[in-house]
Length: 242
Image (cartoon, rainbow, N blue to C red; front, top):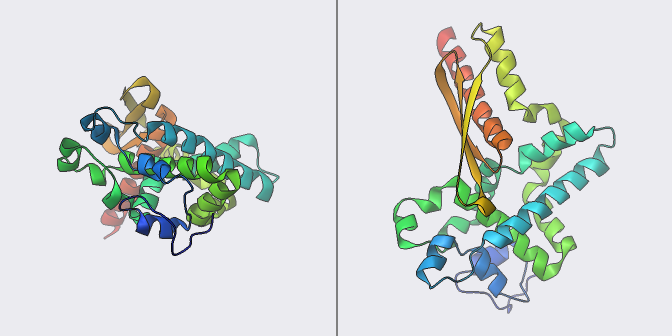
């Protein structure tokens, strides 16, 4: 519901409430959304944000897919998948988290905090989705959709307008072949528990490692790695022209 000046907020949640323009009827949902499993383990096994993150990921995917479906009826299901992948990924959601100030309000275990957990894209992205999941549980789909579009409308609209731009693997392969370096090669490995599995991908072009990326699936991780590699090739070309 709309935020009012006297709305109750969980500890440390005032700024985040204002930034997402939402007041929780159940403030504990926001508390949980900001609770990383490393902190929960130190508190005797309190519920972490992992289940909310799982729910938020589904809600986010639905909102993005429906936006693409309604605004661009000519898009195929394949192009709609590319639109979703260009928005629902670790890099974008981590940027959203930083913009909302989530990093400062995360509850992290001592070891995770000391090792730079507040700057890890995967942790930040998961927290963003957990907040979306919390809003969905507290206020329903309409409020969750409002939040998602307020945070990501410009990115979604850009992806819908140029869905092919989100296919970084195809772009990388075209550029690599054009430069005579052959077809890129990917290596991906999974890590984390089965219910929160993540993947780290590395892409090699002509034997040279050009990019790495992380995602919830091998395909997502490879897309992020390919995007980084495209940037590396652009830098190389710029250097060669100098």
